[in-house]
Image (tube, rainbow, N blue to C red):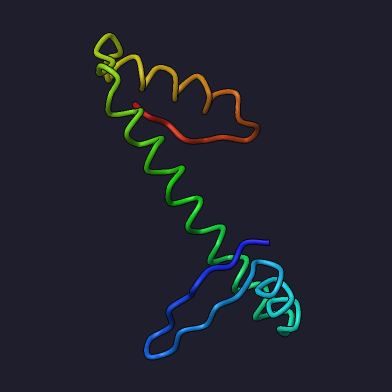
Length: 88
């Protein structure tokens, strides 16, 4: 069982992961959700940063013109039921 020292401003607590999980399980549902969100947000921030870095490492796509984009939008809009949108 691994143990970590967690530093909270002006407080040091040494807990095992199991002890930390037990403490989190004792929280009210809304507070447990906040803990889960904090963990998820941190992981998502890392994944998003990796995806952005990967995107920027690729060469830009230059063979698509504004006209191509507008033509595709017009095609999609024309297929939309009841659409009265015109890009002309």
